[in-house]
Image 1 (spheres, rainbow, N blue to C red):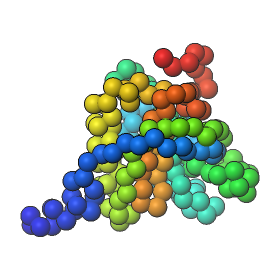
Image 2: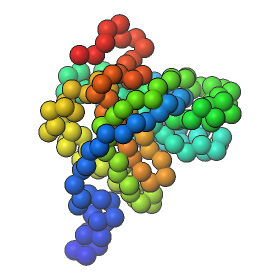
Image 3: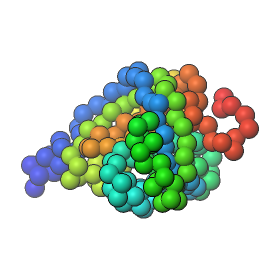
Image 4: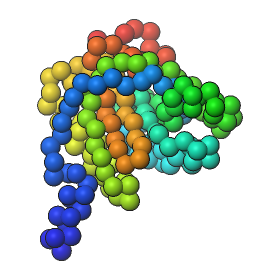
Length: 182
């Protein structure tokens, strides 16, 4: 039993440290559904998005998280959860994604401090929430990351990227917000 537990922990990556590095991401288009509520309850919406993505042959999901749940009531936290597309993918699939009820949000190219977390796809229901929890716990201990102007999460093919925008809000500001984040 101990060996099985250690194997699961090893496969999930939970035994390794969280590393952060500066990298550029984007530009891309997020075809999204708007979400308001606890960020820990987004899984059903991602399942709906996964089904839409598979219908049109896409696989990269993502989310833009606008609010920090330590500063905003968790029930009031806002996010755009969706399908992240390159320019070519957006052009090819825009009509189908909009007909599926998704809205469109541009994410420009930007520099992020990010953590990339690979995991075995067959363990995604366990690995994704645990990895997200571990990455955000590490970020809470970093003074620079506490000042992030927005967070972008990308999920595809057994990899999670959590990207913290430090220099600009880079399309990570909610369209309804009238002032820049501090």
